Image (cartoon, rainbow, N blue to C red; front, side, top):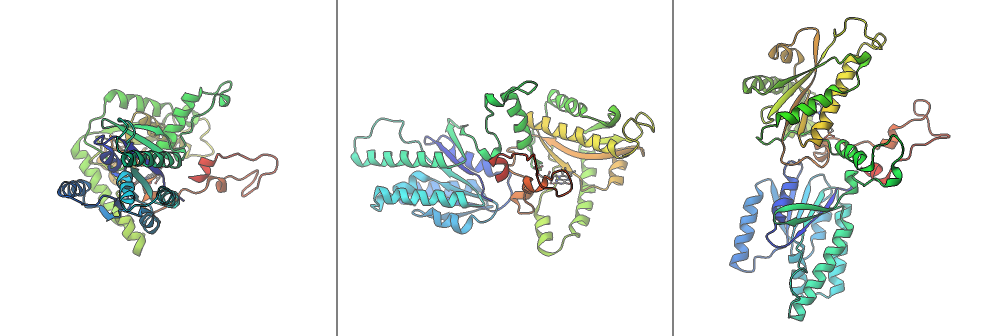
Amino acid sequence: MSGKTILVTGGSRSGKSRHALQLTRTEIGPKLFIATAEPFDEEMTERIKKHQNERGKEWITIEEPLDPAIIVREKGNQPGYIVLDCITLWLSNMVMKNMARQAILDRVNNFIRECKNSTSEIIVITNELGSGIVPMEPSARSFRDIAGETNQILASEFDEVINMVSGIPVTIKTSQKDKNTPLSEEDYSEHEFAPGKKQGLYEAIYKRRDVRHFIPKPIDPVKLGRVLDAAHHAGSVGYMQPWNFLVITDPIVKNKISLNFKNANEEAAQKFSDEKQKLYNSLKLEGIQDAAVNICVTCDRTRFGPNVLGRNTVFETDLFSTCCAVQNLWLAARAEGLAVGWVSILSQEQLKQDLDIPDHVQPVAYLCVGHTEAFYSKPMLESAGWAQRLPVEKLIYYNKWQGTPTDYKVQLSNSTKND
Ligand SMILES: Cc1cc2nc3c(=O)[nH]c(=O)nc-3n(C[C@H](O)[C@H](O)[C@H](O)COP(=O)(O)O)c2cc1C
């Protein structure tokens, strides 16, 4: 499965490189930086050094002034990131080697092909050169032209295009892989939400992520109120509403839960062997202390007495109902720009003890809630190579277990199939 391709464009000093790195900040997996710049003089050497320091130790830098397609082909066969900075210098290097226009465009197209085949997510930085006055020099004009032409090809072939304007990213092309395709008016009929509203709902669903990286920024209590009220509007068996929401901000309580996680996680790691255990231990699976708020969602198994409408045959439906509330919470939080991470690697007995939860109440979800620098573009476990999304068409049966379609078949859009 190929990763997303993103083009970051803009004028010089518009914040392109900083934003490209920010897009990778909270993702797991190897991070490779292809530098096309060559240190011709002292100023350039200094600039390259400054950028290297800004990137941090997790980055591997490869200098490739002429054919970055080779690097993408060799290194892009795994989840992770490849950032190329920048197209303009690459083009300039080829021009300086007296390469003909067509030979340059062939290389550009070959590079795009490799990017589209790559498993890693590719972020490419370029410059908008065409907005100023027409250069006097014919060679400068022809360079401006090939830079513009290359940018157009990249923008048309890449999944997403971001234009940096005075440090502010403006998305001018949205990825189909984000399932963010605008819905047309034709899709709008009686009882349906208007296209914009429907799109908002799907956006919350597809852009919801389990997040483990938080920034120290408090949560607006009004926002959290809306999120918890959305949770409270979930369906529940017999209208039982068995949930409670324990909002935790006390660092002492968080420390206790964090210790619980540490012990449970050590035990959980032992279940995997060799390479899988190594990978497991490299994963960040909680953000208990970093998240501004923790919320324990519980299920009161005795609410409304022993006979609840609809629950007499399947006793666990109260737990299912609580999960519905958690999903509402997760989606509403995403729409509010709040990140949520579910931590289940906890001793339930210890959790109940630490939070004074009575016997008849069961903790269902322990959630870390807060602000994040960036939402992961795909599940973190996918980026880390732990698991992949199963093809949805393989999960749909007709009329019986493993039944194939006869008179009716669900249609899946291409974007759904490809993810
Ligand atoms: C019931 C449940 C328990 C989970 N427990 C954990 C956990 O303990 N630690 C963790 O890092 N993620 C946990 N997750 C998050 C999943 O790993 C995550 O949902 C999955 O990888 C898909 O990623 P996404 O939520 O970003 O789409 C849990 C999710 C659910 C629904």
